[in-house]
Structures are given as C-alpha cells and as structure tokens.
Amino acid sequence: MAGRLPLAEGEVVLADTTSPLSSMIFPLLEFVVVTGVCWGAIGWMDFHAVPAAARNLVVALWAIVGVVRFLLPLVAARRRRFVVTQHRVLARGRRGAIDSIPFGDIHSVRRERGGISVAVYGFERPLYFPEVGRARKVERVLCAQLGQG
Image (cartoon, rainbow, N blue to C red; front, side, top):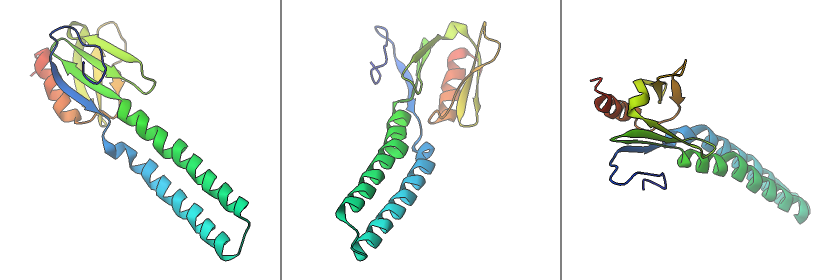
C-alpha cells in the first residue's frame, strides 16, 4: 500500500508524489511575519510592564494563528498525493477523497501550471490535479504508460 492508498494485489507503483514544499512558501512567510509582529508586541509589553494576562493573550493568539494559517495547510499539502501504477492513477485531494482512474478511461495527459491535467473519456473537461510534485516526471511516466510517447 503506497502511503495508505488502496492498491490491488501485485500492483506496482511507478510514481508516487506529494505536493512540493514550494507550495508552502507563502504560508511560511505569513507565519514569519505574524511571529515577528506578535513577539515584537510581547517585547513591548514586557518593557512597559503590561499585565501578564495581556501578554499571555498575545501568545495564545500567535499559537492559534500559527496552527490555522501554517500547520493545518502544511498537513493538508503533505496529505495530497498523486500515485501512478501500471494500471491506473490514484489521486488524493485536499479533503482526503481518493480518485482512481484506470488507464483505459484516460484519453490524454499533460502538465499544466505545476499540476497535471488528465483528459478522461466521458468528461467534457480534463480533470486538473494542482501542485503535483515532480510534474514533468509524472507526465513522462503517464505518457509512457498510455503509449503517447
């Protein structure tokens, strides 16, 4: 089983990626700014002898913002996966739902804006999977499996 994604007996994983860490640049920068502002305010409070309850409130605010704006997006980004086996594509999205697309249902594949677009028979538009790590390599593996070249 590739990272708790359901694989059939004897199914071989050809590519297994998760969101690249570069997708976390802006949440990290935001966390750094919030940390600087909050701890600067705490330093000011310490210098001016503000009551400890106000200082603790700022620390709690910093912790809550850090969890909501950095830690939760980090966990969600690292849970997103895109797995290619010799028979199908498995993709787990933001909400944890797993898409399983057999190669027989795939018309074509192409890399687009750091993600992968998969054209599936019966769908009007291609399915777009954003922030696929090593998208170029995944596209090559998929095209080789589909016989596109």
